Image: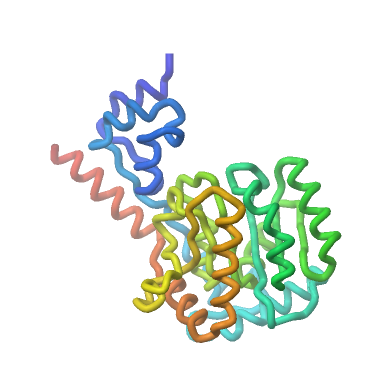
Length: 283
């Protein structure tokens, strides 16, 4: 007996937290054994993106970051980077990108892709700030990484809301190479803070981040960096693209401003739910 299967079979409508994930769960492996039923009910399945609290996550008013800024004062974002470098004992450098990661240290979050490429990324050169807790093996590898790169890598094995805000405000690139991600929130926070997300094209990440391809850059629609294959090589290639573009300050500023102009508020998401519920009442 499966209560969730019964619910899915008899529900008037099924909602999940992104259009991309709604498609993925209709196939294996995303459906995790329920893909046949979900595919059968595809016409009654809809994905609506989660929203974020745009008051809590607002770099212009955030009380948890050292220096507030907005799309018109992005130079002040660098003050947050300098403050975090000072706080965490990183070398005071504004000539290399700062990579950020906030999340659970679990296979789902792409640690198997990330760990093999971090040494190469730091040698590029770059700096890294990582905040999270999770599997002991990942924690040990990350602590060893920080020891290999003193002054360039800081690993904080904790859950710390204040530090999460500081990383979003300070980092240049936010790493989110998830193996699967129904919606994801950190990439939405990152867009809000002009911290360009680097994500795998999966679930809600694919729905919310526009890759900095030549065409998208020319159209001023790009908001981050996207890769497809769940392989370290693909992640490293995307990271190299990000680092190359970081050197082009004018293009980087354009990406930041486009990212910060996106609307992923709960108001937008709530209106989509209301529209769905009203349509059901009319049937």
